[in-house]
Image 1 (cartoon, rainbow, N blue to C red):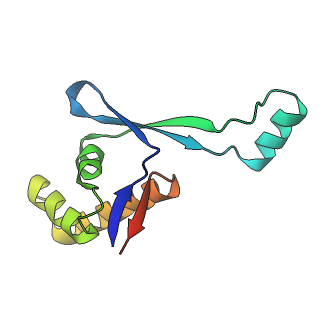
Image 2: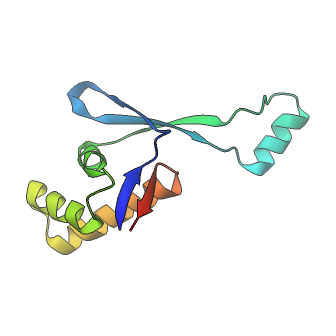
Length: 108
């Protein structure tokens, strides 16, 4: 599997080189209904931001649609001296979270 970035995600670099990702997210249905009834919602999606730490930024930079998850885990292990299994679990958990938020997709 090869993770690829969502083209709709905007990336900016903070001091120290860390990444901040800005993306669109849907409101929870109950909140959207309540806001609509109160006249406080204009129908636009919610804009969210996610600031990545050093490891997250390193992994984000590896996501190019070409590298496999295994390649990413190997790079993480080599860079930070993490055992292979721990690196695989960390990368998989990170990618799951990005996928849950709609920041990445996966291709074969």
